[in-house]
Image (tube, rainbow, N blue to C red; front, side, top):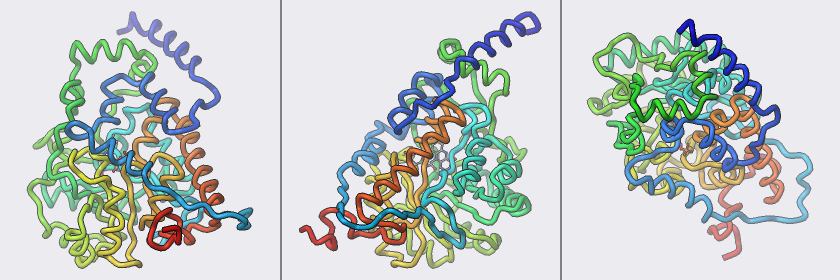
Length: 398
Ligand SMILES: Cc1cc2nc3c(=O)[nH]c(=O)nc-3n(C[C@H](O)[C@H](O)[C@H](O)COP(=O)(O)O)c2cc1C
């Protein structure tokens, strides 16, 4: 190792010098294309991959394209605000960062960049139970804007201990993810031998060797690992995300234990939404996990009106799965969401250009949201509703 060290650090300097100084990201497609080039295949596939044949993932995106918006003219939209209130907080934008495990695989320091972006853009950032940074660090970096996402994990006791740890670290908002009874078959990951901890295979060795920029940065920073699962080794890696041995009683127990805001993520039907609301969760986070769990899921955006109808007009709903730009943010708000979360676009941007890419992607989505509002004749997020959807019952065009 000592012999190769000067070579490695020289190469590292060269690779880092080659990082562009101005972002080339102007859209989700840019971020994806650049990430595909710069990330090892195994990492890119982990981010982009989904359950089964990945038709559900394509459907999430395609359905957004079918939803049309209704422009209005001659409205004074010179002064527009993206400020949004949700669950007792006011944020500068109507979107935040979805919980994603192992973000530091996209680039070293990714979690920290996400937390800093939460501060800079004034929005929430969720840290996953499978996150690659300690929850205490994340909350500090985010200046109090971090929300903690809980996977049930090994046992009720282990989960509740993690909840206590989050409370002690100053978290006020907890998200319980309920759509992972078991991790689904993600064929790209199986094919690539991707798992935790990393195992080096001939295929992954070649993958890393042909992506020296990423590999050298990782070599310097150390291989990321989950940092919030506790010490128990009774289950390894991603298996610790599965909630196969729990039921509704855990949600009741959690509601009693957690004094802060409780959000339940991954509710996909009105039949499940109603009891979640009755048990006393403060909000539902409608999501199909980016179709990473069930290829046959309907497009997540189609679930929003159904769940909105079941829980009533006042109950807070968050949404993710398939949001790629500001128009999608507006569409989700119009379909019944109060707040929208961003997933893959941000990991691709981090993989493409690190912190610079992340901030560029967030700027794009923010600007696009505001400009879309201008086309629709809307100046406030609260002015969003079904009437901005072309062809809806209330838009008057049909
Ligand atoms: C790489 C990756 C890791 C994820 N890890 C988690 C996780 O640990 N917990 C969780 O609740 N959701 C997780 N998700 C799902 C996201 O929170 C979100 O639901 C999904 O990314 C939305 O789909 P989209 O990114 O295609 O818009 C993950 C998603 C990705 C892409």
